[in-house]
Each structure stands twice: as structure tokens, then as C-alpha cells.
Image 1 (spheres, protein in one colour):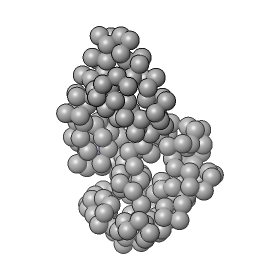
Image 2 (cartoon, rainbow, N blue to C red; image 1 turned 90 degrees about the vertical axis):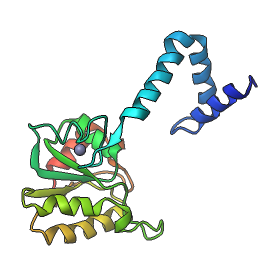
Image 3 (cartoon, protein in one colour; image 1 turned 135 degrees about the vertical axis):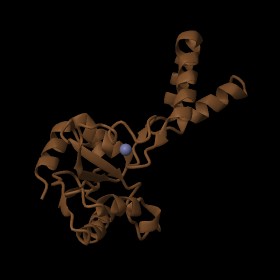
Image 4 (spheres, rainbow, N blue to C red; image 1 turned 60 degrees about the vertical axis):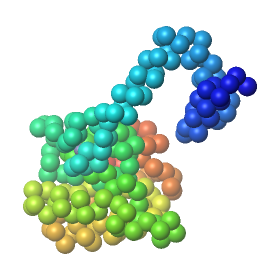
Length: 195
Ligand SMILES: [Zn+2]
């Protein structure tokens, strides 16, 4: 349509979540209408983020600090770990401002169909964190899917062996609903009503 550079750019945007060819064309057009104020700053921000952002070596959060800003925050309660599937879930809980402990990002759920086993997730890191004895409670905030429930059951057994109290968030959410799509009020209620 307008040369290989333009096509490449549109295809990259079109593959992003929530976008398609039509949205991608509109975004690229808007960027190109003011390259100096929109396109150049975007290119710089992308390069900066790609260079600086890493997985936290403690919890798996994405941050330009390692340990991340949550793990290194002295005001957070390190005695409570909230276990989530992905960074998007962690961000959702942070947005809701209902949790003052620390997190552990698993990187997915166990899945027999998908061929995901315990070694594919950050399970050993979690067990290592609770084995020190400083953690009193692990909250399992996993999605209400079959795989989420299987993962919660598996983790509860492993964690109980190390003497930590294991709770689960009460999820009054649609089956298969991940934390990231919940509104803040529902998230807060789910967290408060853990058992
Ligand atoms: Zn961290």
C-alpha cells in the first residue's frame, strides 16, 4: 500500500492484543500525521522499555528494577505471598490497592492438554521462598478454570508440606474469568473473602 516500512509497521500493530488490520491502519496513520510528537517518542519509549524492563528474580513481576519495586518496598508485608498466574493479574491487584503483601508470578497454570507441567512454571521458586519460614500465608489467586483449580490443588499440597497457611480468593466471577478482567471492587471482595 505505501511501501515495505509501512506494511511492516501495520502488521506489527495488527498482531497486538485487541487490535486488527483496521485499528492498526488507523494507529499508523495517526502516528505518521505527526512523526515528531508521536512517532519518534513512541520509538524511543519502546527501545527504552525493551532495554530496561526485566523479570524480577524474586517474584517474576516486570520492572526496570531487580528486585522489583514491590519486592524492594520495605512497607510491604513479606509474610504474605499472593500467587498469581501472570503479571497482568499482579497489575490488576495493584490497581485495586487491596493487597499489602508481596507476589509470586507462576507464569501460567498446569495444563494436561497444553502439556504444561510444574517444571514449566515458577513453582520451585515459590517453594524456595516459603521454605525459609518467614512466610505465614500464601494466597492462591488463580483463575476459576479447570486448569486453575488443578494448579491451586497442586500448590496447596506442596505449600502445606512446608507449614505455610494456604488460602484461596473467593471468586464470584464467571468461569474462566481471569483476574485482569475483574473490576476493582470485585477484586477487593474476592481478596477479603479468602478462605
Ligand atoms: Zn519482585
